[in-house]
Image: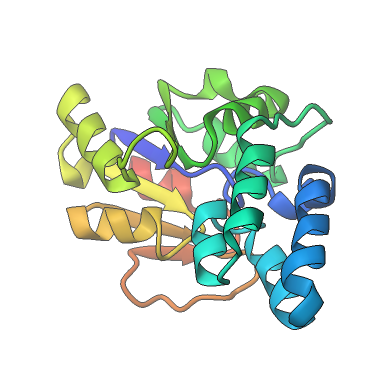
Length: 209
């Protein structure tokens, strides 16, 4: 039986695409005006990637100019989301599992915490951690290790749930923690993960058996 769940936020608890055009409107326009002038396909791809990955990673990968990168950082570091937000319908399958839960998300602290507020999920978690690249070099792997040390969890007592094989899932595998890859669009293979599914229906059975 597991003692704790470590959950990602974006595209794990709610779909980023449901708020992307409202949240990223100014940034998307900047990308179109800058990167899109010479390479519309790259601009469209970068905008799509921003619904799945941290801004800094996308900016570096797509070669944003220094001016565009800084303008984007300025927009996002001061941004909050104040419109209605809704979790995935099957998030309730996780919410009702009676074990400790921790939220570990990467992004700008002010923005990520505003999402938590709008989703009304703060009370679901024993603690919430925002891995903010602007504030430290800490990674999700560092946070997972910190939680394990602080709360006394062994690797086999934890399940990490997320949508990104190269972020929280990778960190968990490197630490020897079981993983649940949430893959509603069937984009990924089972390689390297303990569990993979399109919904959370089986999570309770996995952690409570």
